[in-house]
Image (cartoon, rainbow, N blue to C red):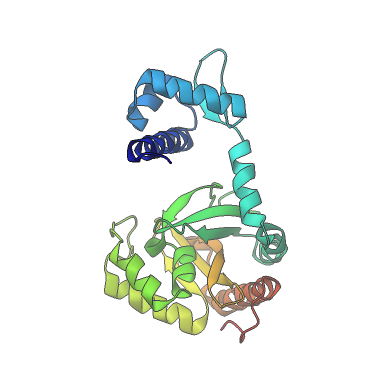
Length: 265
């Protein structure tokens, strides 16, 4: 039977591994000293952890600069987990392609980090325009400042919404960022009623987005799809058309994911 001390040591070791991985995710490429400092552990321990990760194929080291970086193996594990049972990326990609061809704008797929108040970008269709909104796979943004986040949060239980809002630290990212819990609740209610979320210069100045949820068999959001526009290229006269396209695609993908309730609208 494991002792309390043994369990504590195991937890500490896991936390060190996670800290190293998160540091490499943030820095993309970093030297041993930087990783040790960010992970708040000794160089010798960090070096031992990194060598193990290199041996397992999750980290690689540049032979010239001696800096470390993540390989794609970790991403492949995440994608495999995401695809387990649902095959979400494959199904969503078809609908995202339709939206991309219809609008020429950037189309993004995001999921809710169940342990944090952030949306994680897991797939994207790039814009056909040179000047466009670009999202990085793995990018994480707060729920309250993105259309993806609001679409995800609006279709969760009232209890979960209350819990997540209570844990939020509102920060101003752009001219219209929501910085008040009551204002967010109002937007979530509107989002749930009409079936889609909007944000106008809430996450980034000069950017406007619209998003719809992808619902599972219980009617709970499992992902969300958004289209992003530079503000100057958004045609207000086509707003209803954009919303209709998103709602249709969101409904079709949700149905393929097992949702059988009423039309999302």
